[in-house]
Length: 464
Ligand SMILES: Nc1ncnc2c1ncn2[C@@H]1O[C@H](COP(=O)(O)OP(=O)(O)O)[C@@H](O)[C@H]1O
Ligand SMILES: [Mg+2]
Image (cartoon, rainbow, N blue to C red; front, side, top):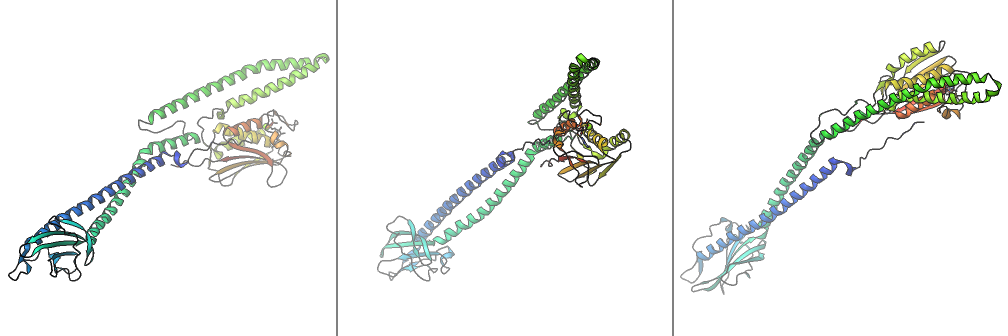
């Protein structure tokens, strides 16, 4: 039985060029986006802090500049601070002036609580996070000497929450934008990879067509990186075909050259058979001659077969190959009924050379014709994965132990019919060359007769 395994093609993830490039793109985009995100948020937070610092330093200077001492020795402001946020109750913007031995003055916004004010120690403006009326505040403080009052603490504070919120809202928006950018980059990366690898996909489809026999060479136009490879492969395919063709012709020539001397030897041996004293050697000569004829016929048939080339194969259909063979068989075996039943696969293509397919069918039909009592039926069934052709006769059939040995060169179980014992050996050879399964067996309906089955597993369509 022919069951040459087709080598499995590597399809593991890491073997795919596309997967590799996509992984690289993913890594590259992730690194880039995370890098941008980190540096942008850090820079922004620093920038916001610095601008708060500048603003509050100006405010504290403004506050210190607005202070006056009235006639009664009380502290007062010329006018409110220019920033209106110091007027809105609990806005998060506060000022406070601490005067020794008096209750502190506070901004209108500070409707409750007070600023701790430890940060103000001398005449340099300092800042730190302290407790304020509405949570933690960034408090700026300075001590200035006011005439007639003495050392006065000026404090200006902003809720830490406001700064945090500004940074958080920026980070949130930036994250959304960068996520969208990452998605766009990955999508264009995918598109670029698909576009860039298209020639390789085309090449793989062309190679599948070559294997299935739909094409004799790798066809199509390819970019400059791939074109030399395709040209070399095509040159190799052509060279292979020529070489195999020459070898077939030479094998044929050799077989023909041997036939005539072999016929002379056989003739001579038959003459020696007449004489009693040479009869034994004559028998042995005839036997050996017979074996040689068989071998020559067998190898000649093999050399004739296109399967021997096993290069690019072609496709053919049973309903095209079979009818001429059936009419030849009807002439060759008069009185026998040959019938073709295509159950549901008449139009399917078989992946082999039509000449080889015809030879294979002729061998099996000739046997069926020779041994059947009257009826021979050719049945074709199949689906997307397998096709099966059954040649069923109503003859004596074969003993189960002979169904395998029947394929050997020269094996014959019934010498009453003419033949060489080569047919099934050649049929087996052809089947093997095309990865077909061929088997003989009892009829599936249980009646007397032989059923020859040829099965082909169709190659899965190449996935683009
Ligand atoms: N359809 C069949 N019915 C019965 N026996 C068969 C059938 N086909 C083949 N055989 C047996 O298998 C043997 C080998 O067949 P084959 O190789 O075609 O050689 P040949 O037909 O020259 O005898 C035959 O001699 C015959 O004994
Ligand atoms: Mg035969």
